[in-house]
Every structure is written in structure tokens, then in C-alpha cells.
Image (cartoon, rainbow, N blue to C red):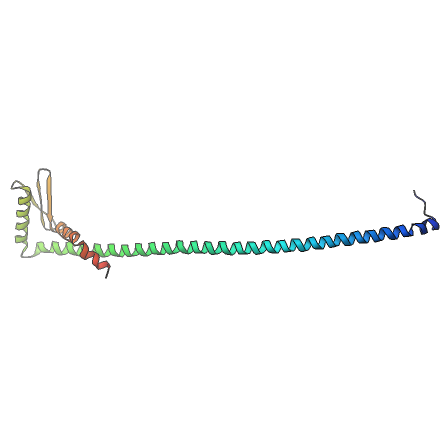
Length: 175
């Protein structure tokens, strides 16, 4: 245990205490000033980093939006093209169906016997007189001679006529 100081020793230590207290206050002020400067520096750095991150996020967001817009535009174009092609296919199929029906209807007309005779003559001319000629259910004939076969049915003739009229049919889509 320590003993209390005498009044003379206490008085002698006064200037030392005062000097220590002044030095401690100066150190505290220096530490506080350094901390305040460091706080300002860190705050400025954080603000610069935040501004850089915001600018980068904006740039990335704009680039992502541009890329997404390009993707959606391409998808829309493909979908529009698919829709147009589907509509064209449906129209072509309907035209084909009507052409085949009109051709098959010839089998019921008064001119059919003359048409059939010409088809038989055409088959014999192409395949020879030994060709086997059969009537087609949709009108017209199917002929064969050995491994050769000739389809002169009215629906097949309508299909071939429609195929040959490709440019005229294609013009339907451009009007």
C-alpha cells in the first residue's frame, strides 16, 4: 500500500501534473484532428466510390436494356415472319384445296369423257401402247408400264399446275 503524499510533495508535483495534463490534452486534440481528417477522407472516398458504382450501374443498365430491346425486337420480327408464313401457308393450302376440288369436279362434267380420252392418249404416248391405265378416284387416270408410273389424276394435275404458277401465286403475298 502506498502512503499519501505530503503537502510539500503534492505541491512539488503540481507543475508535473499540469504539464502532463497539457501534454495529454495536446495528444487528444491531435488524435481527434487526425480522426476527423481520416473521417473526411473516408467519407470523400466513399462518395467517389458510390458515384462510380452509380455511373457503372447506369451504364450497365443502359447496355442491358439495349441488348434486351434488340433481343425483343428480333423475337418480334421472327414472330411476325412466322405469323405471315403461317397465313401464307393457310392461304396456299386453301387455294390448293379449291383447285383440286375444281379439277375433281370436271369428272362430273359433260366434257369429262373427252378429257379422259386425252389423258389416256397422253399416258400411252409417254409409256407406250402396253401401258396399264386405271381410273383415279378423283377423276383422271393413273398409268404404269413396268417400273414407270404416270399420275394423270385430276387432283395431281391441279397440283402440278399450281406448282408451275409459283410466281403468280407468290404475287398474292406481295399485294
